Image (cartoon, rainbow, N blue to C red; front, side, top):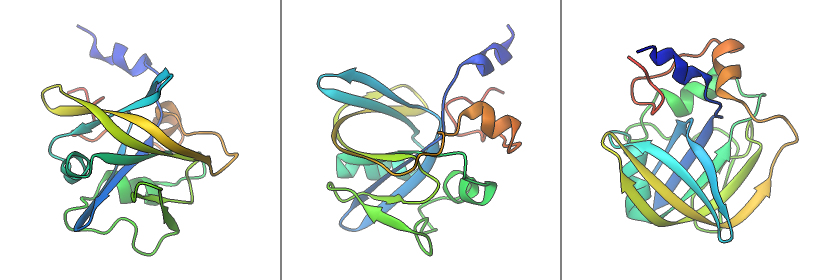
Amino acid sequence: MDKSALYKFSSGLYVVSAATPDDKGACLINTGLQLTSSPLQVEVVVNKQNHTEGVIEKAGHFALAPVDETADMIFVGRYGFRTSASYDKFDGIASATTVLGDPYPTEHVAAVLACEVVQTLDVGTHVIFVGEVKDAEVLSSEPPMTYAYYHGTLKGKTPPKASSFVA
């Protein structure tokens, strides 16, 4: 089987984040997708080993922000290669909070969605969270970063916890 065929699927890069009164988490994912238009719902797929997965589960809501092409590897590394369990990913950068209370970066992202979790599905190593969009805002006119751009232009690698990691 040629697993590299999966590299032909198009996707973007997204910061997904959540907060509870005593914890917050954020991570970079490549699996954000609009599911329905009425009600307006999106899905995110988060590895169970990511601190952010547990925060989303406890909070019952999340923010989803598509990364734009102005992002560099420092930004990607902040969200994609560090853990929220021991590192505050929002410290020292421009950020805001959604109407549901979830933090999100305000630079290097094209938009932000505030989502209430309405369904979850355990898919083994990951959890799919379906969120109903409660608020949305465009933050940039820059093009959203695709996973192909991340790999081709930024020369980024796929970490083992990513849903698209192929061994």
